[in-house]
Length: 138
Image (cartoon, rainbow, N blue to C red; front, side, top):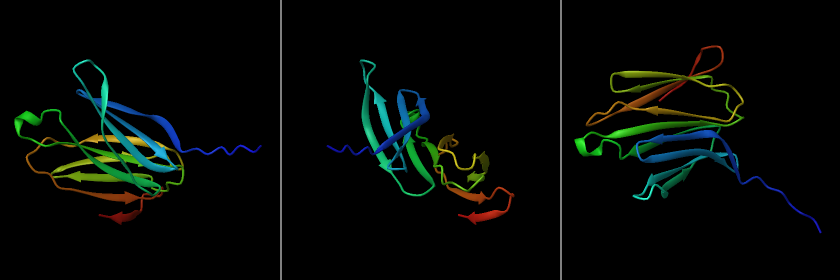
């Protein structure tokens, strides 16, 4: 009898709580993914949503319920890198704010960036290689 071992889901240190919500970043078949949970009245976390993307570096824009009553949008910009990532730095522009995130090359990782609470938000990002040269401007 032959047994086939396959890694379908690889977890790494990427869990964060935002108010009563929990976000878990992981790799599914080496593809960046996340699950979003919300705490119920008993303190248990109920599954809310999940998403998966391909690529060595992927972004997810997650809407949080934290502070939703004040009319402002609360967004979390999640970036997940895999061991195949060759982008060393990203500049994320959100309205007039700029966030600089640095990545270790060839390492699975997740970075959570809570965007400013505003009624409307636009964002763009730039990628840089390990020599600091601009790779891509979105």
